[in-house]
Image (cartoon, rainbow, N blue to C red):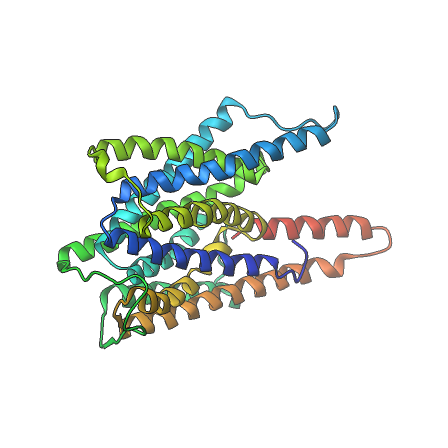
Length: 367
């Protein structure tokens, strides 16, 4: 990534905007009575129908441009098995668990739960050697402060309600059906949401080595969608045997499937994989607090959900954690660059430039 490039930041904001829309339309569909497992199958099947033809056309174009010295990369059985396992982890398990939990909670809590991903991803990346902490430096303290703020924000939003604020719209687009959910169900749903975010974080981390092995992001995304659609079909058939509930009408359920498939799955997976490859997996998930802020506003406006003071306070904490870690990463990058600058001389200039490029590449692939 070129120094000073804003493209990953723009993509990260776009990812969170798409996430917000997914929270809203999915919750509206589930409130209308749509089965979550059937919804996931339709979502992934539609995304596959969109992405797979595009990926095949792209591969055909790559083959026509390739020469005998640089042939197009072929898929091995080992690579296909990786796609199958990553699809099972990142889509089939994560999405089914996540949406089943969303039905037990709310769009705001679901969005808040995704903000545990910076904590989880940071710890996973640390264990896998993709992240380092230097406690004696400001960047290390900034990372710790950001993680602490994110964790505090998640706990405040999930477990502290506080005074309620009236919905922004008296007649929302998708009227929210109030549910009398018991405290035990609410807590279970919250922790299942966090578990789904853990597997999602692991999927994001695994995309980095996967794309180094197979750089075609579009085909990698399409193959994972295809395997996930097949896996989710099996899950949906086992869970929902009444096929009358599989029918789609011209309602919010149909809109949710289209939006979630084309934007929430197809475009989102591609953008996440691209952003993770360019700037590292933690960079991707550290923008998740923005989706919470957007969701608090949109759930009140479009669903008529009652927003509580705890959600707003937690949102401020989460955004503070976001910018604390981004500042730490920026500070760490500047220090890395300064370390290689003084080593240039007449005879070593090319070697120093090469070393600097290697350091930059290593830095953008780390978290």
